View (cartoon, rainbow, N blue to C red):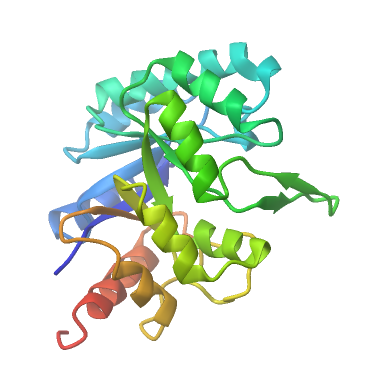
Length: 261
């Protein structure tokens, strides 16, 4: 029993990975591409359209100036989202994954997300915080199931469950991981994000590679039904090929079917 596995790339990666991605898709290594849209990359859309691959789109996040939690950011958010829609429409993506923003308030996130009027939107859960370069913390919207439920309910959007983010949040809030994930699962996620876990006590995400003996990844996959989408968000070690991603997928298939391969 296998999910649909997705390759996570950024819209600036076309010249790095397009040929490698095409080859891996032909070999049935992955089932779709989740494409993070870096602002200002619309000229590269034509390159992505050359791949006959299903797409999911990921909206820019705080690092690229998109922040739904702050009212003063709304005009810029709308401008950035116009480019996201351009990619989603051209690549016929059924979903657009969106972060809830940093700081601010969940009610503001819900208000802005509702105002975008995007039926394909999926809100992604986040860790409780991110660590800035100066050592200070920046707090994320959507680290707890209750806040995700509030935003999704008021905005009328769906939900993407990121397992590593759920682990980080569980550690920060001192909530048992199983309880955290099961509360998220009650919100009926449309799809999932997955990465390897090296530190079970981590509070910020790391996107490590998959290990076949990773019991947490095995636990995470137990919540995924056959055919559901799982974007694999592991780091890329090369700027010219996707060999490490291919290895990650191979290990995930062994975890799902330990008696094979």
